[in-house]
Amino acid sequence: MAETEPQGRQPMQCADTDRLHAEFGKHFVSLLAWDEPTTGDSDLRDPMALSGFIASVKGLWFWVSAGHLLRAIDERLDGGRRRITRTMFFDRWAGGPFTRGIPIDFAEIRRFAESCERLDYFVLPLRQNTVDLLQANGVSPLDEPRWLELPDPNEIEYCFLEGTPYEKARGLPNRGVTLARASLPARLLSVAPNDAASTLAVSIDAELSETIGPEQIANIKGMSGGPLFAVAHDRQRYWVLGIQSGWHETQRVIHATPLCIVLAAADIAIRVLIEEHRGSAEQVLR
Image 1 (tube, rainbow, N blue to C red):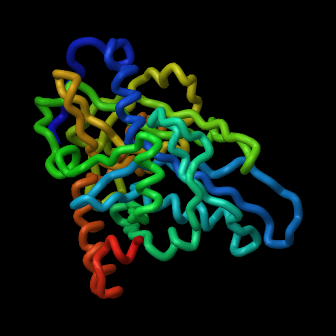
Image 2: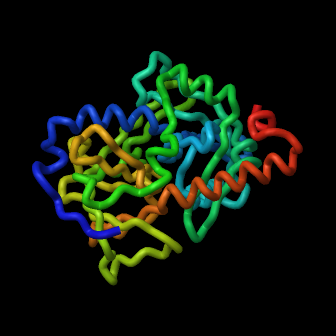
Image 3: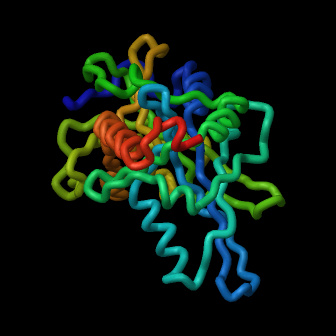
């Protein structure tokens, strides 16, 4: 993708920023995971907050994130000395009436998740009851027109990286959770600097603005798995370009796996499910 230079006003000064941030929130869903020692000792920690979003393929909903986050969970479990006690979708960003989140079985994540290390994606097909609960709270998926074909760079005015930084995740189950979602402006790069090259098989590279944003975030750690959005000059149309995976702090360069490649793989995973269970994907995930 060709490099695009910033045009017009800077994104964080744009009058449409708040509206777009709210619009992006309809697709953004975090996954929270709590853990404890297997010995039963009291050692409660703040939750792992995994950035992610909802996309659809032929009407089937998926939660999409970065594949290395699954490995991060394994590392936190410390070789079996800790265990996951609760996982839930945090779907308050859509502005719906419900604030308690949606419980999800971690074993189900392990069973159905499709991931790839070289492309660094993690795709989880969602059961219909989970879809119903997300819809009731205002969540909608990024469907094919928003990801199937990447826009011409000349159509893009600016980009945003969305995510939930770890430093903003606080809280215990049943005692309330504090989580902040950040929107950081970014500029697409045709080629990443040599000292900030991507290790992904395919990546979209972008440079984050010098402005961290109104949330006063010191570190973007935790924003992996979040979507990289592109906004058109008319500030009405937008697309999701990819899933944020890599980050070179000194160069302020991020790397994102193209979503069109990821969801093509997800479509293949659906077909495998259908073949294995001899039914439709909707029946398998009901």
